Structure formats: structure tokens, C-alpha cells
View 1 (cartoon, rainbow, N blue to C red):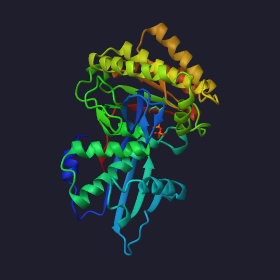
View 2 (view 1 turned 135 degrees about the horizontal axis):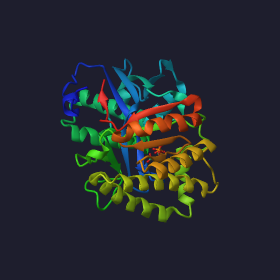
View 3 (view 1 turned 30 degrees about the vertical axis):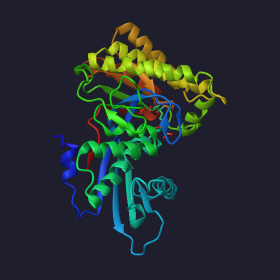
View 4 (view 1 turned 90 degrees about the vertical axis):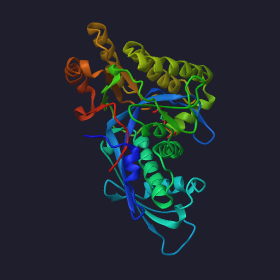
Length: 361
Ligand code: DP6
């Protein structure tokens, strides 16, 4: 597939259009965002791989209201069916965006959204869903007002808006690798939006694999929102934020130099720290399942035996992401299929790769 630049995609928008649609991917954090304050501001910077197979398609149709009122008017359809619960969440989100968009109360919006991954897979959809919605609303602004002129301003605003919906969504806007959160050694870094890593990603990470093992599809017992909040009273919070800042520098260096071993070490340290923080929160909670631990043990044993660079990470849930370079995929996949697939619900594994970012559809 040939890639059309975001600038060209924006240029294709016309003022006569009454709908717009985007496909936006999920992402997997290497250094994790865990803890927030103020209005969706992170306690520490984070960096992620943009994914490809796991994505959300969102189409927004907009029509000038026949009778002007002060309401936000949204009909929301998820996978073809009207969904009131999602509609009210989106209305609440858009209701807070008057300063960012002046037109929201003048139109009736119909939003249709669907995910590439099954709803019940336990895969967090907030990053792909909120980034796709942000891209649609920013495109409508472009259609109605002509602003912005270039992709830099457009993506900055879309990332800012996506962040307000879900922190990790801010990072889904960029190809391959994105970082979010102010860091003294990262140029242009900011707490209010993510930035692209740029073209310094080492060859070794191109086409990197992320096989997502669905160990449990059950709804999480503690939401990310509640988990972030519990960091405020966590006795290890300050050391954690320092560790994340250090890991940002090491990760960026590893991504530039192709140091897969260093990358893998940080990847696993971050996953284990995230879950350790949950376990020592008050109240304490555990999101890993027996299958999560079994997979982790097997991955470590496999690595010890084969010296192949297979590393795991977790987000705020029981499912395991297995990351490895494309060049060893033929040696690693048979192990995953034979030894790890039995731990997955209905043998479910989402075979994903590092991706090229969102696109208009
Ligand atoms: C563990 O972005 O889902 O996946 O801002 O409350 O929507 P909200 O939280 P969310 O948190 C993601 C946490 C994480 C780590 C990460 O993606 O960086």
C-alpha cells in the first residue's frame, strides 16, 4: 500500500463535504504513562510503538442544526448498533471542548465506529478510539474553517484533543514511535500533546512484531482511570517517576542505535514496575492472571535457552504483548504457537506490527 502523506490527505478535504472518516491505530507503551494530574497531564513521560492491525475506524457525519440550541447533539453507533452509553460519554467529552472548537453546538453529529479487534478481547480501545475521534473532529474544523494549513499543526491539535479523551491516545497519531510528556532531554516534548520520534528509528526496529496474547477477555476489575488515581497515594510514586525519566533516555538511545537487548530489558522492567505499583497501591489490586505469569516464565526460559530476543510487556491488564524483530520471526512464532497459544482464550492472538500511523478512509 502506498502511503499518502497527512498533508495530501488534508488537501483532499473539500468544503462541500458533510462527513469524514479516519482509521487510527492502538499503541503499546515501552515506558508507561501511569499517574496523572490536572486535566489529563501525565506524571511522567512515556514512549510507545504505534500499532497497525489493532485499530478503530470512525466516521463522523455532520449536518447544520435546523433549530439552534446550546446542546451537543450526537448519535453514536458502535459496530452498526446505536449505543447510548458511548453516546453520553462522547457528549460529555465534546461538551468540554468549546474553547478548542467553536462549531460543536451548531451541528448534529452522527458517529459510527468499529474496532478491528473483537470488543470482548480485553484489548484497550481507548487509544485508537479517542485518536480516531480527535482526527475526525479536527478534520471537520479544517473543512469548516480552512484551518490548519499543514499537517504539523493538524497533528499537534489532534494529539492534544486525543489526550483529553484518553492520555495514551495522544501517542497514536504518529508513525512507528511517539513520545508524550515533558522531558528535559527531548526536544519539543510536552505534557499537552505527543510528538513523533522522527526518522532516527534504527533498521532493527522496522517492522517489529507485537503478538498480543489474549490471556483473559474479562472486563478489568480496576479501570485505568482508577489506577492512575491510586498513584497519588502510592509510596513509591516519586521513585517511579524518576525511573520513567531515566528509562526514556535509555529507550530513545536503544531505538536509535538498534540495541535490542537494552530495549528488551527496559520493556520488561516497565511492565513489571507497572504491575508492582498496582500491587502496592492502597487498596492493592492484581490485574495479571495465572496465564500471564505462566507466559512470562516461558518467555524467560525460552530466551535463556535460545538467546533469541523475545521480550514481553503488559498494559494495564492480563494480556501479554510479545515483541521481537522481524528477522527472527520464523524462529519465534513456532514457539509462541506451540507453547503459549494454549494459555490464550480460544487460542486468540492478535498478530500486530509497528505501524505507519492513522490514515483517512
Ligand atoms: C498502562 O491512557 O488508558 O496503558 O488517560 O485515563 O484514559 P486515561 O488512561 P490510559 O492509560 C494507559 C496506561 C497504560 C500505559 C500507557 O499506555 O502508557
